[in-house]
Length: 171
Image (cartoon, rainbow, N blue to C red; front, side, top):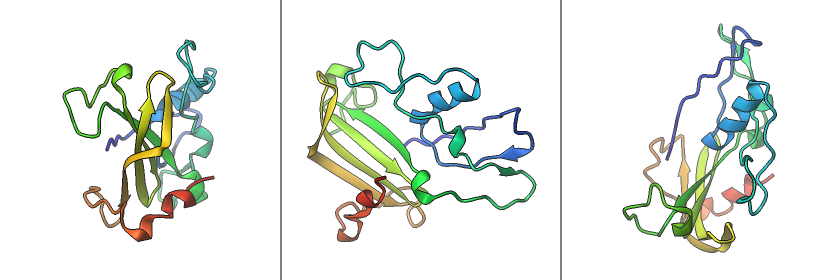
């Protein structure tokens, strides 16, 4: 689990702030957009031949800005408050290069969906030569309810009540 706080100042919007759910995947295109730079195109599959591309998206248009002085936050459509992450792993069990595997060693890829209420991660087989995930080869899953389990210590993925949750988050 990786969490970070990003305080981004946009001089065009003084005295206002946005508190939104984001993942590092979208930090690069969001900062490029704020800087007035062209946001690079999405990465094609495969993307080895591309010099610069992105996986995340520019989130500036999704921020719900509010006045700093006491205005209640404006809540957007819950389907829009979703962040995505991915985590490469060389194996199902931790090993010496688990945190920074070389591309050729990546055999498992974790894909996470994070909302205000949930974090869902599925760990699937991954082909580093084709750069493709195999979602029919599920190695493990994680599902956490953020309100009742803020430290994400109690994985309820195998509980029957959580089975349909990931599908409810799909656009």
